[in-house]
Length: 433
Image 1: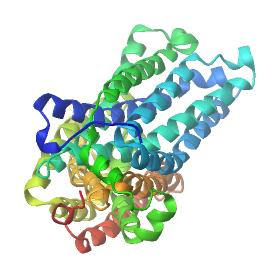
Image 2 (image 1 turned 180 degrees about the horizontal axis):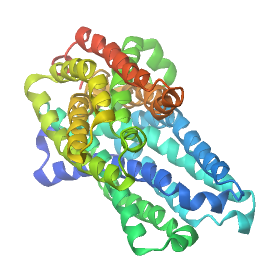
Image 3 (image 1 turned 30 degrees about the vertical axis):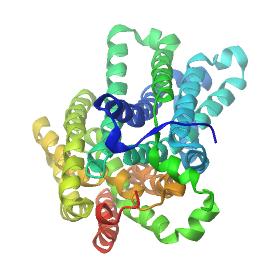
Image 4 (image 1 turned 135 degrees about the horizontal axis):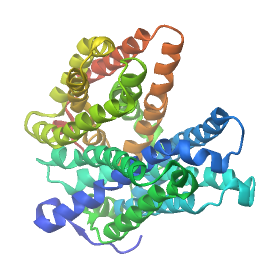
C-alpha cells in the first residue's frame, strides 16, 4: 500500500474539516449534474449520433445508452468498493472523479455519425459505461470517507452533505439548460451548444480531482490496513461474512430510493402529464421545492446526531405510508402552482428522513476493512431495482389506465422498509466506526 497520511477526526482543523466535507461529497454534484445533463440535452444530441427520419427512434437509442449506464452502477459499486477498501478512501474518490471527467469530456468531443459513422454511437456508449462505473463507486467511497472523517457526534451532519451536493447537481444542470436556451438558438444548440454542458461537467470533475488529491486519508482505513489478519474486501467475503447487513441495506434502501425518485426525478413529468401544469411552471415548482429540500438535509443529519438515526427513519416510514397516496392524488386535482409546490415540498420533507442519513446508517453497519463495498454494492442493487425503474413503472401504470397503482406501489415499498426500520437497531448506538 502507498504511504498515506491521516488525521483522526478529533485532530482535524476547521480548514481540514471543510476540505474533507467538500472533497468527500462534491463528487455527487458532478454525478447528478452529468446524470441530468444527458437526459436534459438528449433532444439536441440524439440526431447527431443516431441519424434517422424517426425522432422517436433517435430518442429511444439515446435512452437505451442512458439505461445501460444505469445498469453499470452495481458493477461500479462492486469494483470501486473493493478498490476503496484495499487502496484507500482517497484513492477510491480520486479514481471515481477521474472517470467522471473522462466520460464527460469524451461525450463533448465525440464527432457525429456524419463524420465517423457507427463509431459515434459506440464511443458514446463507452463514455456512458465509464460514467456508470464511476457513479456506482462514488456513493460508497464518499459515504465511507465522510463517516470516517467525522467525529462520532457529527457523523449524521457530515454525511448529509452527500444529498446537499446531489440536489445541487440537479439544480445546476437545470440552470445550465435554462441559460443555454436563453442565449443560444435551437439551431446552435443542435449544432454545437449541446456539447457545452458536458465540457462544464468535465472541467468541474477535473477541479474536484485536484481537490481530492490533497485530501487526508482516514485514520480508520490506515488502522484497518495495518491489521494483516483481516479478510480482504471482496464480493464473496461480503456475502459470506455479512449477509444480514447486505440484506438490511437493500431492504432499508428499497422504499427510500423509490420514494426519492418518485418525488424528485419523476415528479416533474407527473406535474405536466397528470397534474396539467405547463413545462416552465413545473420546472419552477420543482426547482423551488428541491432548493428547500437541499437545505433540509444538514438539519435532519444534525438532528440524527442528537436523537438517533432510527427515529428519523421511522418518521419517514410512517409518514410515507400515511401520506404518499394522498399527496399524489391531491396533486392530480390541484389548480394553483403554489398549492402544487406545497404538496411536492411535503413529499420531499417526508423523504428527508431517509435521504439525510441513509449513507451514515449503512456505513455504521460494516467494519472498516469492507465498509466501502458494504455500503456501495447492496445500495446500488436496490437503487437499480427500485429507484431506476420508478419512472418506467409510473408511466407504464399510467398508460395502462391505473395510475393510482403507482401511488400504492410506492406506499407498499415504504411499508416494507418501515418494518425493517422498526426491527433494526439504532446504528448511532451500535456503530462499527
